[in-house]
Image (cartoon, rainbow over all chains, first blue to last red; front, side, top):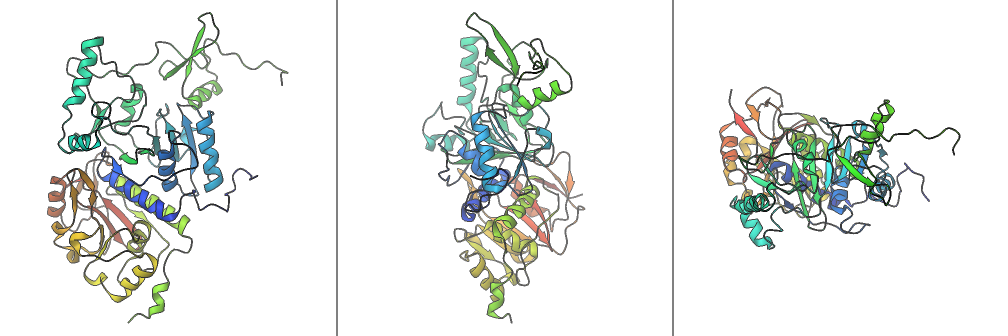
Length: 297
Length: 191
């Protein structure tokens, strides 16, 4: 059994071998050079199943330095199985420090959220991506979607959004909402809620996207334009549950709905656990917040 | 004349850590065009600079074709590349990476710019400079909040390269232990 914080000597730094890291690093740099374009890479088998963040883990492994402070979140939470496992994986194989505080982290690996606290220059946000191709559910053939990106033929995506409006009266896509990057490539921002889409654009941090099973890496350099697709008469709108956080009282954070009994009781809490805990530590209270009773173990 | 044994020296002594730290600097340099970063860990033979040597050690290997341009194409560098990197040497038209001074790399229009369906299959140029300074043509585009400035060797070639976007080559500038990046996405304007 290993002590947390000390690097396991049986592994190369950050698990991957150097040849693999060079290949991934070249793909990351080409992704930075062509924002929003999906660069193919030779994804490796990782000691976790596809769908658990193997793409993000490989990108993180290629970027980590020993001085980094790593944060891993899953749907905004630091304490779920996926986040805990990946954090411990890099503690063991890279010996890096870890944190749950967004502002203290230098590298943040995320599944399906962008932290509420604004990111800063010097930070890297690594997304775990299940399906990197925004056109995949409209056109299953890779040869065709590649051609569509080449020709900037994105009419099909607008038809899909239009059909949303025709059927539901509004654009019903609520997550993985497509963005156009620097007026060129349409990009899937991974299944983040569209609430987070405005944070993609003009972000001072480097944003890297890794899809392990689909073998693609793409990137948004800092301060890159990323416009959510919409129509003049149906402009893009963010959405969230129309409530305040029941623990910290935040009015402007993205909320999870939690069923609390079998009689219709429910509560809404911040999906970003670090943001919520930070607000409570500063004395802000929501509708259902009750501190731990004294004397209870 | 460089003794054959010298080719064995000057590589990374702790490759995983040194290449990780160097890559982060190169990533920041390319993601924020116009910023100048420092790298360390390699002592390549003349005429290569430390930064060019580090960039080669971090990014090239037996799977990437390398073009040595001008004075960089000498026995000392060839031996060093053969021992530490193992990259096959190639003509400019076929290269994934090329290293040399701006004059030696000219005409840069001969380098690979990628294919319309695979724009990533393009060359990365490592341009050796006398010095790097944040004074020169104005840079705007992805990675830049308002504008930055960098002493580019010329502007016309980079404007022509930007006009090819999303095709085009990408550039790293090196001088001593300093490195700066200019991806194809950057707009360059002489001021």
